[in-house]
Image 1: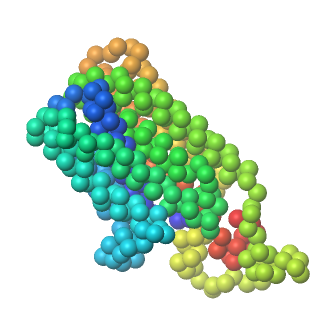
Image 2 (image 1 turned 45 degrees about the vertical axis):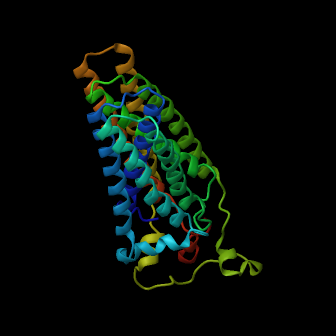
Image 3 (image 1 turned 90 degrees about the vertical axis):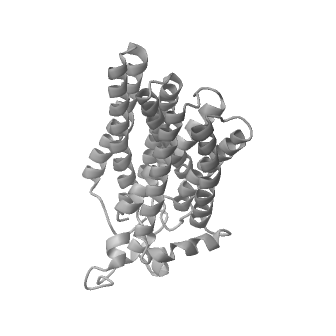
Length: 317
């Protein structure tokens, strides 16, 4: 599949935003984070900015972005519609919780109810995003049981690294956010490696013989390409990344997205560094993770193959 930059921005930015929103709200409700006014302003401001940027960027992948509102009507059958509805609804409880935190410095009842709803909605929204891809049977690499859990894990991981940075910037206790970041990044890396191993070893379940219905007469191969010149299907569905490039990009994704953020966060936690070094370490961890997540998401799209490519020369998908 052709990696659309708008969708890459959508999935990475909104994932980090929802992860930050869920974790920040949860830790505040549990009393781990104190509802300091400017901390809340920064936390919710960053989360809302990332979420809104991601959601708006997703519309640029549509042929007619002004018709994006119609996606809300298909909630019975479409994970995209469900995601849109829950994403829009999340602004209400999140806004109320932010109002109580920032304006009144209070997250006790009734504001805490909005906080719990915010946590649940943020998690459900990310799950729906993963299910958009996991529900597509026409793309075997995406129709995989690990896709939705992986999206959720990476959202928690990126959100925790971002929360760790925000807490350090405001000189708030950040140990719990650091530990969550280490655990979620480790889990996300293991699941991602398991996913790569699974798709690499999976035999092609769809063949050109099945696609054409000519399998009863023997092996099928195209005599001529379906189109004389490149078209939308070939450009969007037939995009392929060379195996050697995919291996290098996977290594870079693991290095920047998981290894360096984990190592940097561990150093900040164990060395009891000064405030300046702690801030530098947390910013470095977030920057590295952001680069790695973009590479990981680009590969997620680039390595996927649509079954329509069977009509364009692919033997199995």
